[in-house]
Length: 237
Ligand code: ADP
Ligand code: TMP
Image 1 (cartoon, rainbow, N blue to C red):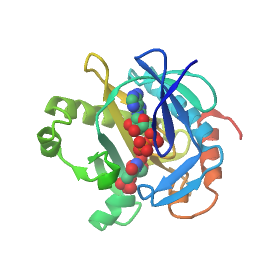
Image 2 (cartoon, protein in one colour):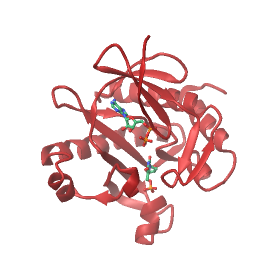
Image 3 (cartoon, protein in one colour):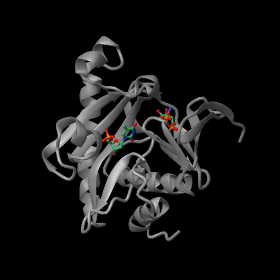
């Protein structure tokens, strides 16, 4: 398949394909934290994140959620629907951790009485600042109806994932999603769902099984990704 480099991000490379409606995504092992301030490699992360994302997208599709994955091409490559990405990081939180714990002075691990949705402006130069509906409408990033669709869709993803992950002894602490518009303006789930953009804790021990092990120099980073892959798919790496 002929491909033309479109964009290289921090974790993935995006190529145009012969089909203008489809993109090829290549998952790298590169890891960054603090918006690129810390850089490193997580061995085989690209392979594991592609497999984990495929697993979650298949699970969500069975529950009626449309996503952008079309066809896995190789361990690290997937064909996706080309979308006009809404420049928002849609974060859903069930338990206080990370920036929420820091911002509101909450002890990490404090359960929230209801899930929290937060919206961040996806802009590396500005360090992805948190924004609200007014900013989004004023900057014409999305309409009120689109914001509502995205928030409700993210909460539905949360319900499905929380319930499923419980059966695998995994607590879904929080996660980030991205959405895009297709040619008809329909909002579709994009990007990835993996230990890079979710906080997963072992339900029995609260051991961190996600990228926080890299962010916080906790060691055994690869093992955490392997463990999530194994619990979801049974694959041992
Ligand atoms: P970042 O841009 O934050 O460094 P990545 O390295 O993961 O992140 O790069 C992937 C890029 O591809 C992101 O900017 C993401 O918004 C974009 N993207 C994800 N899915 C699609 C899609 N279906 N269509 C177009 N762009 C997409
Ligand atoms: P935070 O606590 O650092 O705000 O992160 C909340 C969740 O969002 C966590 O699961 C990690 C994820 N996330 C990303 O995927 N990309 C980002 O740029 C940020 C800041 C968080």
